[in-house]
Length: 331
Image (cartoon, rainbow, N blue to C red; front, side, top):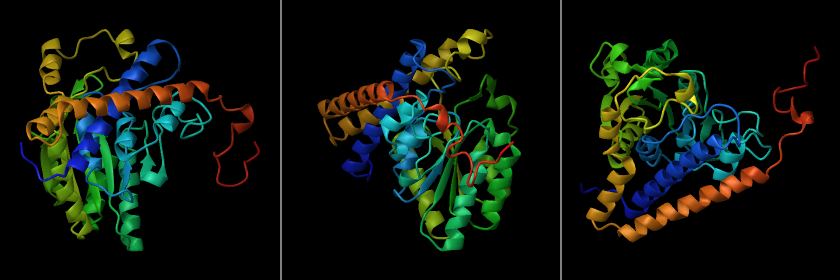
């Protein structure tokens, strides 16, 4: 598929997709080895959604994410060392080890934060869009949420408000087919979640979430619309998570909710394979160049893992630091 996207952008997208893939594979590996505790929700299979969307943003634009929380920050340019240290619960992590896997934030690259509370980031991103309009600043806000979160009241309230006030917000629904183990087809009455955009008088766009280029192009149109003052867009990215909902879930949830044949079918459309094939087939870059990007990303993840292992745990004296805006209240 031919595209007008520059080689630099295409290669950046490939690099960030590989950084996410290798990062998630490493997280699975070290979790299995017992090197950290707590939850982690792998983003493997969905890399094209966050990377394609974020590539259409400026560094000064903002994003917010959800509990499947490593892919979004890495797609926006997060520091791998800080991200891995946070997962390990170490002092050099993004939240000084207090947030863990589901709470990564870095305002310097436009990451407002992630949250384990379903749909809770949607009002946050909408608020950022309101701030842009009130302050007269040229930035847009984008939020990632799942098909399960699309049924939450906070999501609908935010989309309604953003449309009424024509806020520069991009709502990206990552429809990975399941809310934990429940198919979206059992909880959504319309054919596609993007059809709901009609109720809020905003464009609803259905995109192949396995195709980073398709995501980039759809997001670029939504961003242009937002910057022009025309309001929000709802993008539904059809995608699939290759792993279980979260690490360790397979050990406690014995019920089968999806067939292996379904997983295999989606694995045949691996987003990394799709983008690499496009880059090579169009002569944008060679297979060797693409392989080198993967190797470089893998090395960066290995370096981040060692950084995390060598970072100290927070001292007990840090317990209440950064928890309150003023003096700590005394019980």
